[in-house]
Length: 484
Image (cartoon, rainbow, N blue to C red; front, side, top):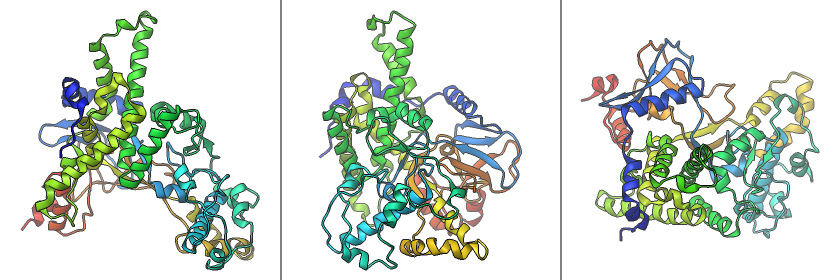
């Protein structure tokens, strides 16, 4: 049965206004201001009547030259990855110390080993930065059977000493990380590389999404239910919550700024029309990217027969409605009511479905162990007396990248080509979650900058099948040449 959203009926005209495509002038102004605010030079975003937006070179780029570093609009670290990697919740840079990062990994390996041997559940994570409440429920106390099965047993207390800073590894001072700054709201889930990132995240969305003890108990309980649902189903809902929260907070700032220019105590001077104009302006970043509703654009899974497509898409719509109701119970704002309609929620998630990119940040732990391996005699032998047992205990997956998903406003404007002239590529100096685009070959001034949405080395038919999920058939020079 189709879910019925009362807000969709009550706010039909406002929703229609929000979903109206921006004019070419609005698009040009928005991206000009965005590029200027980020200090991006050498590129511009242009609107094309046939292919939508595109990114163009305003100067020549040599092969391997940086084209763009694009901070994300919203991003989320995968819930399971939070256990293995402690990163800044805003910029996704690794934080803490090499010892803390390694200690966390070893700690979790012990917990998993203990669980597989049926040890009792307990709580021993008081200094385990970055584990949320749902993680804490899975903590287990150390047991003999778990430790005895580890590949290379470590001396007692090593893991705890790594995490609390008592054990300093050889040469780790060459891989210093910024100390972890806890969330100002006290949620114990978000940590940051600096107060600047903490404040930026708080002001952009976390103010409404923090589950700290200082939060209203009912709102906190509702947020925990929403987060649990998202972690169990699809963390794209977390991105949607951040997008809605950031829109609400931008709306409040715009309204407050307007009131500041008028009689501060007379709120009646802000009309309904003005309130909608504030909401439309706050919505602007999303208006530039949304196209289709999630249940309309999500690719049909391989294990779902085409005859069951309608049923599958209805299930996706019902799942979105279920998530929306949980979010509405947590952060609903009457003045921003249209944002809590299923139509708006579907378009936000659809934007992420079609434009999201993998968020990957390399772990400094790998660089650390490679550095130890490259030491010369006798320094290497001395260092490995300490590091080798730890490396053996970590096993083959000794270093795990920060992994998640994010929406990048400028990279999302780049069109696809199976013979692209640019590519997403993390250089050694790129230590955070920003998207980094470099020239794949020489790019001339005036040329459109393209990237590949799929593996361009796949055969023609496989590329076209993969690109069909994005809603288009590629007509790049490579595809025209290879088309049967």
